[in-house]
Length: 482
Image 1: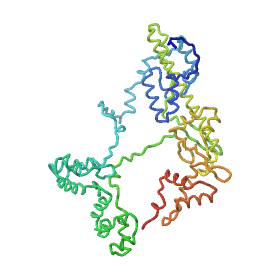
Image 2: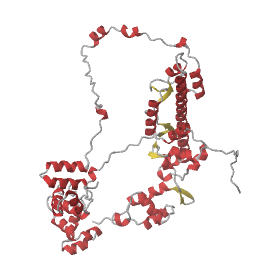
Image 3: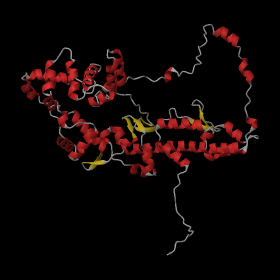
């Protein structure tokens, strides 16, 4: 059969993601902080957009308060010159400034202007010292000099975030070009730096450095670490007492001292900057009902610049200029429309969640219902993917606290004749662990039995999974050793 070229006419349906549609989807996914950044960027790129001052109310003449078609019609209409306001510069100079200063300006002192380009003090970032800089400062103030200082600097540079030495001494010796005995000698000097226990190669060495530096000295604590560290890890206090031939009470006191030592000496220097969550929605209780209020704090109200609308009809404007203004105007109007659509969608989704989870808002987390995206999508007649975009990385402030919108969507677990949300089950598990006896913590099987008494029926492996998600260690790790 020979090959030949043919023309075929075929009709297919295809969804085309226009740039405007992609922008609308992105705006829908943005949280409050990301929205602020996106609008700030749009204001820089599109000269037809301008932010309406917050103290200035919307008026009937404000293009951003009306439909897109009406805006575009007004932009293409000829401007009315009879309504143009004329600014009279003489009004500014009608004030008798000399008399004003004589009457009210006796204590007036001109403000000192700073024309330098230095950033303001409000924009200065705070400096937080990390472990490396903390150690280097001590090295510079120490008596370690010459090749030893280079070796010490190499050791400090290989400390991990917890303060432990991450590399073998042989590698340090090869890097600096010295003998390993010399590296060990410098390492002992570095281990005398603050924080105590830094530059250790193991947990045992870290605890020993701190135990030997205790004031007053605790020789039994040092002996336990040196001679019975394995028994100490297993929590066998009586076995330690027999091995060291020391009274149980003395061993107990020494173990209490060891428990105060820091197994991660570099932890205080970790970057623990607090990340603040800005709610996108507020659910406020008014009487017996709840109101949904969108957080518009800081989000500019956009409108089309009247200057460019007049420029569109100016006699001297070229066709290239008019085409540019038309293009930017379409983009600006689409952006304003997308913002309004985003606000409506977030409002409707939150309102639907509030309807489904009313008992949670009234009574607390134990009454959180199982809920899936399809339930909300069917309720407000939208697609599940839209609900997923709206609820991702967005937070709502409620009388019960601040939650991510995804928090309200949970799988169901059998609770008697009904079902209960998985988050409620996690809360039950956390409550059981919190109220347990520290000397006899509840095992996963005992937690299963306790939940069953509350008509919550789940498997032991499910309890183990939820316990790990809550960051709760197993019962063997929760037991109070001494």
